[in-house]
Length: 335
Image (tube, rainbow, N blue to C red; front, side, top):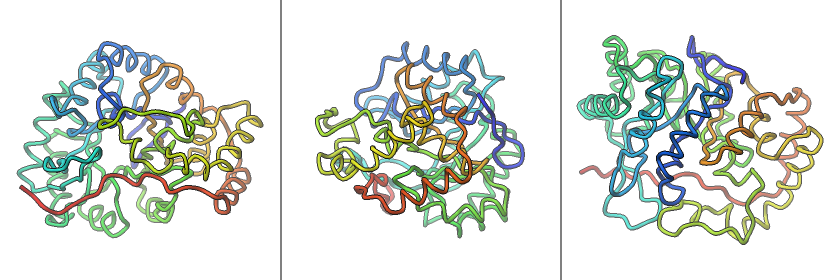
């Protein structure tokens, strides 16, 4: 596995492991023993960057994922980087498969969240602490001030923002330097490429979540794929509908052609494309399967030249695609 630097000094594996899907949003939670073994195997493969959040869980255990990650990584704590998040809760009045998000980044809430996350993760510090979503009721400068205090106290060592805009990046970074942003990014969701100039100006890393468009770009799904109703967000994602699969036929054909040329898989090409685009981009695909874990790690060894990346971009600009899932709706109400 190759390694990259986020921000000034956070050394992470070129591919990280998004752990959310082990507990949340991709059907019923996976077997914990199996997931602990999978995470241990990830460490053996060279992964050192593991992503979770306080809200990744189930109805019975809303913090299931942090507990799982903390338990699995306890033997390796001095070798790995743990990223987690604060600042949202789910709208408990909603019956939707993907309920709306309610942002809450009041300083007292952040303080409570960090202490709870430290306890669940079984650690004395969090390596990278993200604001999960911007809270319009709390100035981002105030949030950055809390992050600065937590860093001084040693409770966290770096901080970042998820689904960040340029305006908020600049405001937050002026109070205390950001190490990374974590935004949705894939061949099907490229709108945040507009942030590349400001990230380079301020030396901020880009952690890409859903880098395979929720798995669709692996090429392993078709119009007959079935997902668990009520617990699997893919049941409401446009790219997985029969129409979506049909609309993305040319995209998948492009990926298959590129993969064949590089003796790789569509998923590996999708990940290599973004890693070869910028040295500060780190994708964090999730999986519950060992073969996928190995496959994703292998993407770090695939080299695409700048000309090849540009050629792919040009094709993506002109290819027919379906809409792609853009995340759960954020609402402003607060209990």
